[in-house]
Length: 202
Image 1: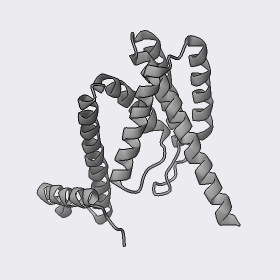
Image 2: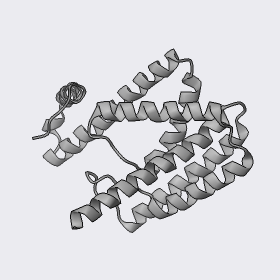
Image 3: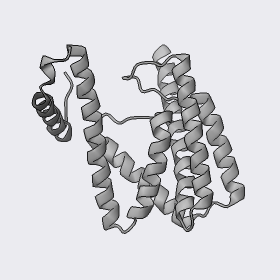
Image 4: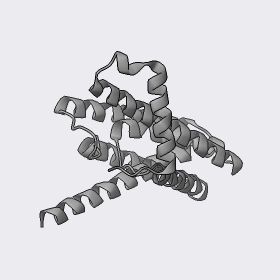
């Protein structure tokens, strides 16, 4: 049986309340209801996580940098995919640490143009080779769907590269570090998954 933490339990009851409020059970099949529950849960989780992160970074005085990093990461991750934590708390902690590291790196190390080009070239190669990164709990995509995700991720990367060059101050640097950290995190996730598969085959 799936064990839920306090955060998950609260959201689970809230989703059930919304389902009951919308009177979905009388008009939808069981499979449709499950899909609606999943969509509502994901949406609710992301909204809660965003506002908690926004509040924390607002208190630390780096909310503008956080918003730039968040929009950059979201525009890539929605098409690239990536790793997921088993609990909302784990997901929140990972997201907070990732954004905090990106913001600190963007302040400490300024990426010059000669450093940006290799980052975006590596990102293009990574997207073409590995996108979309599909978690085990999600259904597989066919070749057409995979190609579509690759195209959308490459388009998002192109737009980010334009904004990184156009934005003044530290914001362009935040975008470049976000792209780099995203590639590093996804690469580590792929390596861990591949190692796990090899151990299962032994």
